[in-house]
Length: 172
Image 1 (cartoon, rainbow, N blue to C red):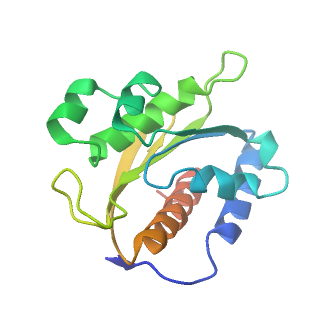
Image 2: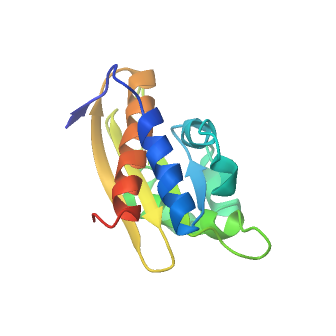
C-alpha cells in the first residue's frame, strides 16, 4: 500500500520520462479518468514535451471510455470502470485515438480508479489501476492508495509516471 502525501511530486519523473522518450524518438498519449488531466498536465509542464506528447483524453464519464477510447461497453457494464482490463483498454485505445498523421503514439498510458470520497463500483477509495500499452505490450498495475481525494490523484500521477519511466527504460 502506498500512502499518498506530500513529497517532491512527479515533476522530476516527468522530466526524466520526457528525456527518455525524446532520446528514443518515441511518443505518448494519455487517457485519464480519476486524474482528470493531471498526468498530461504534468508531462506538458516539462520543456520540450511537445516533441513526445500527442495529447490527452479525460474520459471521466464512463460512456466516454467506450465512445472515444474503444473500451468494451460489456466490460464496463459487467465490471465497472475501476478495473485492470479497463485501464489496459484505455491505454490501447488512446494510442490510436490521438494518432498524429495516421501514426499511433508509441505508448498509451491510462488512469482509472476511486479517489473518493465514496466507493465506486463496489471498490474502496484508493483503488486505482494504471495502464501502459505499446504495440508490443499491454499492462495494468493495481495501486492501493491512502489519503484524501487530492493526495490519491497526485499519488496516481507519480506512480504511473514512475512505472512508465521504468518500462521505457527497460526495467520491467
